[in-house]
Length: 206
Image (cartoon, rainbow, N blue to C red; front, side, top):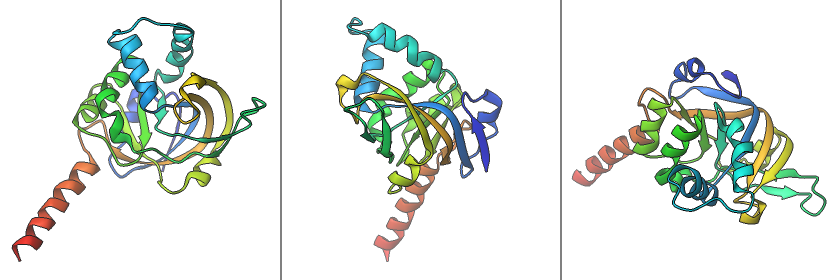
């Protein structure tokens, strides 16, 4: 088990290999489709001009993402009426939806860890090698268990995107994950797909 504290140094990322168990502690952000699209359009490709509190949010999240982690998660949150936020459930979202954006986001923010389920594609794997970074698989179907590692919800940005799509700033302790894409070009998801296709071909030939 690799017990890492955010932000994560490059040497700790390079030491990780596919199959390693990792527990994360520190401050991270949640972010899904709307957040990634907003980051790309407003601050990376700059196809739209910043509006409202965009610049303020950017400055707030940039420090967290530098050497940090983003979690593909649409949490169930209590305390929305009082502002005393608490995660009730925090299961991972399928990550492949962020494949068009993730590599550019990693490079722009020096993002070291992407957390989700199901793995990602070649663009993200290339960014993992360059930044360097890793993709960490969180346990699907364990939303309540994972929520227990979220010790504090420090705040929220872009709540107007909706609760599942907002940028939630969370403090975690021993957040459980497994490395399935590393900074050395290895992807467990590619290996599984290749082996599955070979097995299917064998079955069809019988």
